[in-house]
Length: 227
Length: 170
Image 1 (cartoon, rainbow over the protein chains, first blue to last red):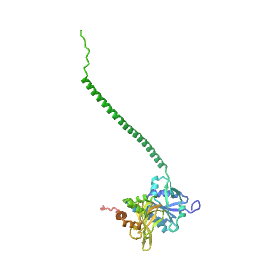
Image 2: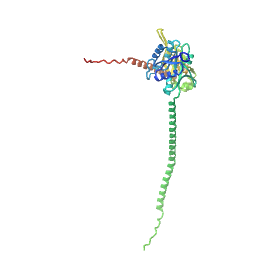
Image 3: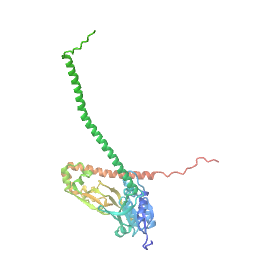
Image 4: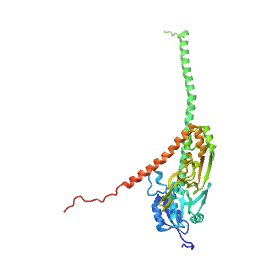
């Protein structure tokens, strides 16, 4: 019994990843009157702990391995649904919550992120407690599906801010560099014909000078009288 | 979801011509399911070939061990753009597995009988689709083999022996 007089809800959490197990533990224990009594890292352990500890709820990661997860073999991590149905089949009255892939949501925001249990309804997040899920569980199979959503943390927020600041700075620098390049290009376009024109003018001047010196009479020199 | 764009995102249909797409889109529908919904059950008559657009689907098989252990076991997880229910392309066959949605799911259901008829009318399309479907089946088989090999290798690793002293000083 908890302080409010309602019976304590005992929970077993099953996920291969220790960080995800701890996160899910924090999520469910935030609800008053809920206590995590065991954690499991594979399906066999989850079934054993469920039989030994007899929890009212088992929260299961869908990518739970049967015994061990193998890298590059996705088939080795698919016992989530089997564990959930197995637990409810073995323990009459027990409920299993199968989370829709909690790993990306929790990993993306880091271990310090505050996560919530609930479900997406279209684009909207509907927060749910374990007792809400318990109330809606089908008495026949008692497996319910839920999502985990992690809040943006201060660290991830400041990281995003830093990234956006860097993007703005580098964007500004790229803009200035682009303009400088464009200006250089324009200058090349103006400068080349101008230099070409100058060269032609010099050559023309030299030619005219040559022609003039050839065909014109020499300028008489002023005679000097020697006394 | 637009049926045309959804069809073009299916890997087994990616080499088809526009006219062939149109014929397939006439026998296709978009279906939505919630988490926990069963798309089809094992042993039910295979009607549709499904292409997953969104969500995650567990393919399960009923396990019967001397009528004592009756349980459904997941043998594959399908994620987009995976294809499942390929028994529907075969002649009047039941599904070999059941399909259960693990998340809100959107699938494109292609009528199996209609697809068979189209493949009979257009041999080129039939050849292409059969080749792609064989790849789907082969990749499933390959993954199952990998898992089998890895599990056998791990179970075959001997336990570390306790060091024994070869020579003892007297």
